[in-house]
Image (cartoon, rainbow, N blue to C red; front, side, top):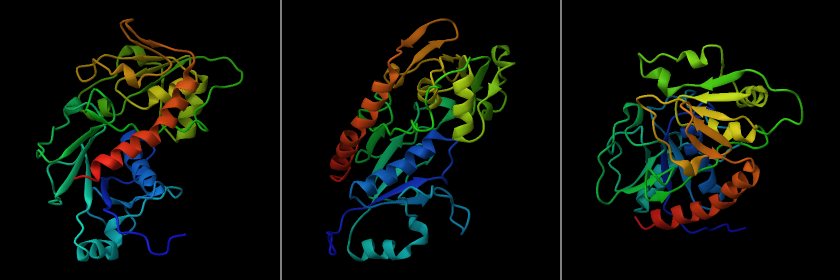
Length: 278
């Protein structure tokens, strides 16, 4: 035990409240947790003005909230340390006037009306996929203790996931998914639906692709004006487009996902090494 640790440059990660319905939000909270578990100092900063009781964290994650811990803000400021601000793609500009900025793109740039935030040459750009940015940090968000293939039983019916596509405003679901079950509810609810479905339709890029693979459910991607290409490096299981174009066919997905989990500490170490040079 080190009672007098060295002062480290902390990470201030801008994020909404924790919700299991958004893989992007889960990524930010898990990143904060992983940095702290790796021996760094990381804090969440609410994306919206904080009021007591309206910002939620996962109770099992190590994710302190900076806005309610002013002693941390004063401590780093008094010691002349600039925190590293991690801005996800939902944040425009540099609202905290940070000197050290990491831009974390969690989805395809410009997709679903997402505004591409101008950045300074000194900003470090990171992405969840190789197609998004040269610096890649892909956080595993699918819990294999929740998402797993059933030991028996017959599959029947289909399900679908459409979140961002619905929120655009005027987009309507296609007849293809008219009689499909919507993937809503807790993570356990989603896993139960995926384990019993013979096909999952997706209107957008989502961690549901991985969750479906872990449950042994094939995935069909539906082309829309906002979703017409995909980075195959993030694919698992059996995936194709609705017009029949095959994206990936892999039945041996468990070792692949385990390799993904095992590789995360290496990616995290690279993230720490590069961002600490800001």
